[in-house]
Image: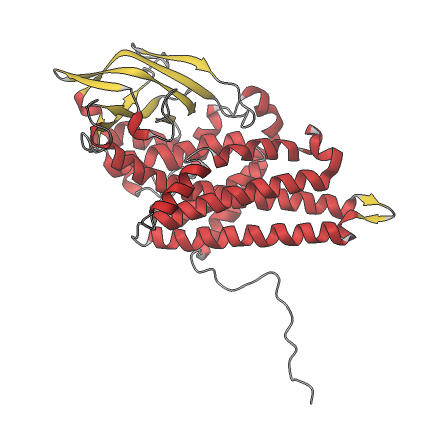
Length: 400
């Protein structure tokens, strides 16, 4: 007896997503359209000139910087999932450096100011930051301290109603252009984790000149992310008011550890999204490029490469979404966030390498841009916590 209905595979699901609402989907449509129209056409130009500050202000005008911040500060009052949507949309820019510069602003600098800042600090930094009028950077890594945050040497010494800051930071994204910095310092050099304090400090005055005691000691050249500026910053008896402390004195390590969790989740989202863009570009190439009389995508070896990539990308995406759901609902799943960051960045690396391979010689050429995606993604396994640190965090979480 024949069945009344025939159930066919549904490769493009239409069921409502378990974390994304219609509002999230509307944002995805509008923001991705803006990115494709106003950012993507300049992707090659900005590799030489860096992304311009004007596009940050433009994003602020459109409301894309304040998606997850309260309306009272100029934000849209959205939930954490809007950050994931924003990361997905930025992947259409074709410029990893531009995406990185924006992520620093929206997901690394502004969240701790919102969570920890006084009302005065929020008005001074968060409000113009959401508008894109002031650009921030995050000062953690130093020439002698990267993964070992407790080993930083930049000091902040109390002197009356001020603190005097001395030290250096390196690998600072947005550092060469930033107006202000969320800065990690040692206020008690005798202690490790309990001697760290955060500050939010001005780096430039109203004339855009660097403030006394601060200088950009070097602009760094990198393998990838060429559209973003990366600087080495120097602090030499830089005086800041005592009310520049962000959060509690001596609790900076714990404050920044919280910030890193959100940063790692968004980094993981950016990775699966960039994987999707590389996959799409390479799939199109495989359907058009012919060898031995037929498109190369018709060869089993290539078809299986796509199947393998698609499976890993989907696994990374689902892992990030499930973990983000827990994070957004008040949990603090550090182990799973760490796993998601580790897995997504590794998948991104594998996918980038495979896409270059499928392109063959053209994959090595700038013209096809997959080589830039390959270079840009490599930072993901280092920034916001190296693979090695992620593995150690996961291992320790099991009592080892």
